[in-house]
Length: 237
Image 1 (cartoon, rainbow, N blue to C red):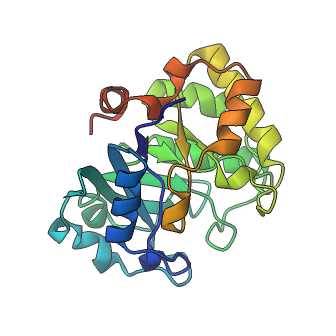
Image 2: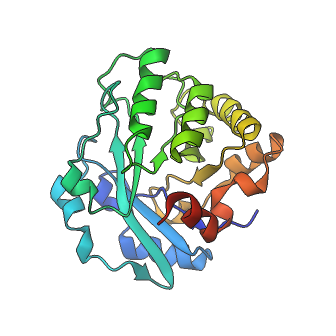
């Protein structure tokens, strides 16, 4: 499968990543990508940048090495109400917004119902484009409800390659992603692959995700990464 974009990556600004914006853009160009999303961890993630960083993104060029850059944030979902950790003013400066649950940031109840409500509420926020790695078994979710909500709102569910790596720390991610994919296939709901790269070499590294797509006989037409036009049609960016 040929992919043209990766919207979930981090630079050293996120605090536990290792490459600059320019290094990430250069690698994306070398890998033949047309669009690269750089989505730094939002402020509640320990070691990440202040809200001022996101408000000032207007100064950064949106094209380097022939690659279009979408600059944004990986927001932290903080509770079962879908609250996130950037103000509306800061979110207005973003090209792209992913919302994810991280153990050191989420303060809501860790039950299947509460976690599902956290995701569903975040998906109702028109400023949020993607739900990041909803596959962590430490935060159980009702995937059928998430898939139906994705179809309703147009918020994309992410198939996160990093989650499924053998050395990864998320629980039961491969099996959870399989369940999510089969439901997306059943309801005709598109997904987006995310590398979650924290170093330039990992940009568009989708090997495990592609393996799972093949196992599920998941249709290429429901994978957003295969076409910039497909991305623009779904997210209008």
